[in-house]
Amino acid sequence: MYMSTETITILIGIASLLLALAGGFGWMIHRMDRMGAELNGRMDRIGDELNGRIDRMGGEVNGRMDHMGAELNGRMDRMSAELNGRMDRMSADLGARMDRMSDELVEVKIAIARVEGPPRHLLTGR
Image (cartoon, rainbow, N blue to C red; front, side, top):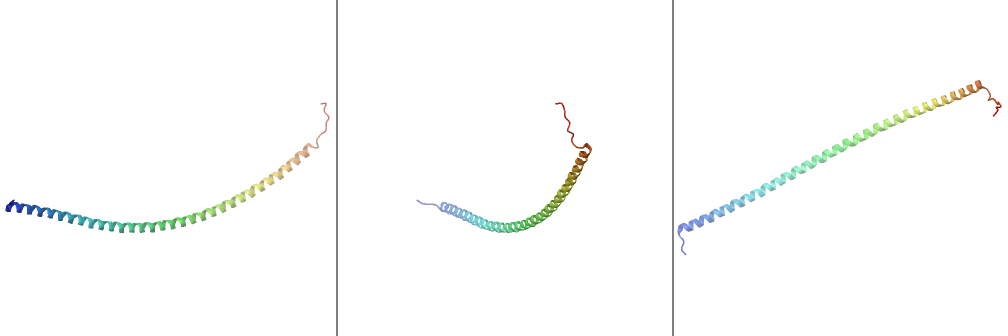
């Protein structure tokens, strides 16, 4: 089989074009892989930085919460002691008032008994 020069030139051109396309595609894939690796590296660095920031903020928030909790516990203890003192004073005051009322009631009973005199023993026809 005999090929003409034009046919051989066309075949060589097509082969060259296919090789050029394959090379361009390979170069593009290689470049995308390199860009992906760079992007992954950047994302890892950003993730590490964000994790560090979050850890620091978490430590700060925990410290503030612990401080606030201790402060609130102290306030609540002081208020509880104050309320207990007030309640003890009120209880003692009410106890004293009740004792005075009881004493006065006894005196009223005695006064009534004196006014009425001794119980009468009357015979009734029943």
